[in-house]
Image 1: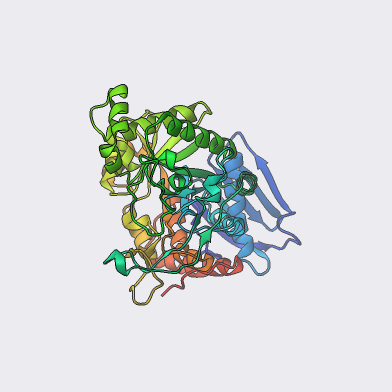
Image 2 (image 1 turned 90 degrees about the vertical axis):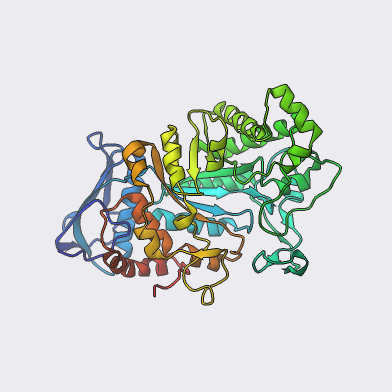
Amino acid sequence: MSAPLSLVPLPQHVSWSSGVWDPADPWEELSVGLSEDLPRTEYTLAISPQGAALTAGSEAALADGRNTFAQIVAGSDGPIPCVSIHDFPRHAWRGLHLDVARHFFGIPQLEKMIDALALHRLNVLHLHLTDDQGWRVEIKGYPRLTEVGARRERTLQGHMSGDPEEFTFDETPHEGFYTQEELRGLVEYARRRGVMIVPEIDLPGHMQAAIAAYPELGNTPSVQVGVREVWGISDHVLGVSDEVFAFVRDVLLQVAEIFPAPYVHIGGDECPRTEWERSTAARTRMTEWGLTRVSEIQGRFTAFAAEVLAERGKRIIGWDEVLESHLPDDTVVMNWRRPRGVVESVGRGFQTIVATSDVLYFDHYQDDPDLEPLAIGGRTTVEDVYEAELVPEKAQADGASLVLGIQGQLWTEYISTPEHLEYMAFPRVCALAERAWGSPRQSYEEFEERLRGHLPRLDAFGIAYRPLD
């Protein structure tokens, strides 16, 4: 029979039956327990006229089951239909990346996003905390990171194209950062909902905000730069002095202490080598390190970050540019540039997260640019996310066990308000959740029918999603 309620993502095995359960308070009357008889990733949920029971193989699976139950409760106006569910995810990493460096979003908005991720059984929030346009995390001993680096005096309006002399700016300062205590509270808020927060400190490129705060971190300490006010890639990257590496160590150790996740993302993307090529200090350090190519300097940063974080029992994640240098064996590669990069990564034996920009970048337009809010470009619809071959066939055949999961990306150069953020995220996140969970594949028409039935839940959460056509 067809499901009385539209669940997203669809559980692996679901069987609706006749009859209803009519509790006074479903949450108080839900029986919950752990069972060693179930694999750690699995849960069962049974709703009968006599009550509701949730059993799981681990706390994480229990959270998944609670979130499924939340959908059922939220989707019912009265008595709850009887159902039996046996469910488990295909992928361990089911994530959403949120860039809070280009535009800052406060704790209440992050909590709202965490609630929405949990509702869809997504279990990772990847926070992009630093970039050229803003530094958003308090670091003890480096007050200027947030006094200077967390504020830019103005922001580019419209696309970054054409003659720079003709760029227009809003002339309004943009600022904000999170204290360590706020982030600890957010981590606990997410943990209670089955969501792990993974922080990103992007290095050695995308560091102009930090260099604006502390010029000695760069390659030209005598030159004062500001927090970047336009988008694109800055040539200002970390220098190579002992002081710089001490800074990297201090930042990573503090971030590792704030976030208990077993991973820290260290960026590694889009790192120009122009300043290193011109730097006498960089050439001297290359000789000391036994390097022959300027490009190998980035590998030195990657190896150093991995060593520091290993002291705290953590692994590094890097955007796929890190594949261009030698990597520790336990590095996790986040592939963004091209689908065949997934094949390369797993072929070299690295655990890999699929985050490819062609389909999983949710800062792209969702329809005709003339009819949509400003976006960076491209076009990615809900149907694209649902239908795309996210894991290449060769990767599935040769390294399926190394594909850790799937993640959508919300870069915020052109997203400045909570309403726009939610519009760009949903309902594409709903399709992402379905794919990341590994639900039984249906036609897009069948998925869309369930999605339309699911939208009232987004309404109940107050999410300003893009309406379906």
